[in-house]
Image (cartoon, rainbow, N blue to C red; front, side, top):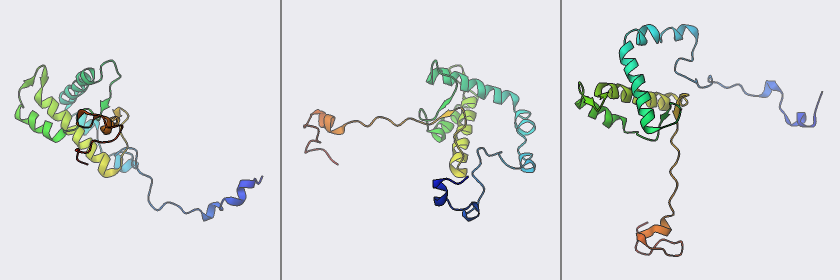
Length: 160
């Protein structure tokens, strides 16, 4: 059955096909043979079961600290200086920061840094437990310029 809109639609054969496959949802979203080169159990969990458990516990404790009362999630905007924190935790390796092992915090930060690099470089979406930072509200600079108000405008002495 033909509709009024059909005359504006090109035939399916005229619609160009994308030349590249659509972006992957995750790094391991590939064909079966390639997925086998990402042995997440045999090559990660089975290598480092206790270290990964410690990192998971670190995530839990950090979520209670940074997102109290909320379901577990990585609040991306709360602490983004991964490289500097990695160095700080590396200096403290073998020790503790309160009840948390410095090397556990180091591993968590290294994973966060790598995850964000992969997302950026491969165009991957945020993981299901990550939350993008919410933009900070824009302050009305004009109303607080130099601590004085100038009818909604910036004061004459303030730099641009």
